[in-house]
Image 1 (cartoon, rainbow, N blue to C red):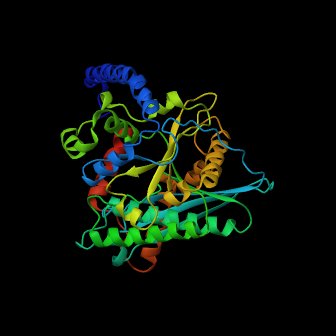
Image 2 (image 1 turned 90 degrees about the vertical axis):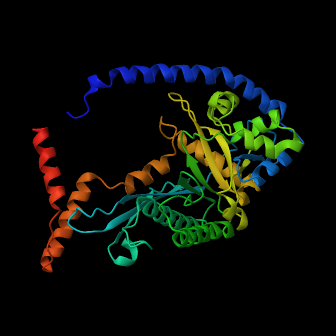
Image 3 (image 1 turned 60 degrees about the horizontal axis):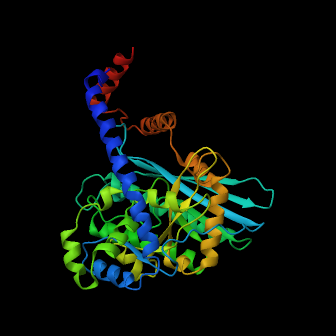
Length: 397
């Protein structure tokens, strides 16, 4: 045993005390912030404040659209016939100590044709990258984890768009992704050329979904965003003529650091959604330029055994069509009620299909080893990998 629990017990106790203290502080701040949501529900100047704050390029939050800020909207009835499509992915990262240098992206998908009595259609799409073009970046180093993650996300959206468009010819269709609806690639470890290429590919899939008028959403479980809280701070504390100064001097988390979740946990009943807002962030600028500005709403997906508030992200062309918002809303609520866990069933199945287990990876490595040896290529792990494996095996005995 290398993590000696007796040596961290005091720190764990401090962690528990700190968590309890923060939870108490945030619970006392929640009623005030919830009151602000009602107080500024139709604030005329709020949109202009947010626009000015966004132009500073130092602020992120939420932009009100057409619905009152404190809206709590029930889901509409789900059509008797509707198709749900979901896709998710997993990966094996390259390991220079393994018997070969490669990476794998595996996409799992499910098509659920509700109202037909048909069994779900499931599929996996594994792809292995082993040549220099895919394994090395512009700096001649092995591609990083963030690059592979981004490539996986593009593959997920490509699969999702293809299947949803195919199904939409036969019935109303909803496309669901796990996580953000935007590709978040503006980060360290991804070159400008790679970022531009990936964003272009990804937004091409959003273009296809828009052309087919398919409600597409990204489901974010346990979101940590503070978009609404920051918007309300702007509404309460910032005069319209001092927005730039306010943004410069207010960098911390407002209202004792609460997130949006406790606000909507109090406001929304089971199955209800919030108003739809637009994300006011700098990273979303390329999406706005292509007509895919990222919007979102909060959704109470609680079940009889567990409370949960999710965040659902959609492109602006869905946010501007309340019928499509309603269809997406109803479909997610229905999916979260399939099991006792408040997470859409189709996304659970897509993840199960995509995941690569330890045993599967071991079998895959064995397959690669056999094929390499068949062609006269040495297939051995590095000395470091061998010694680590021996040490770990010995410790387990």
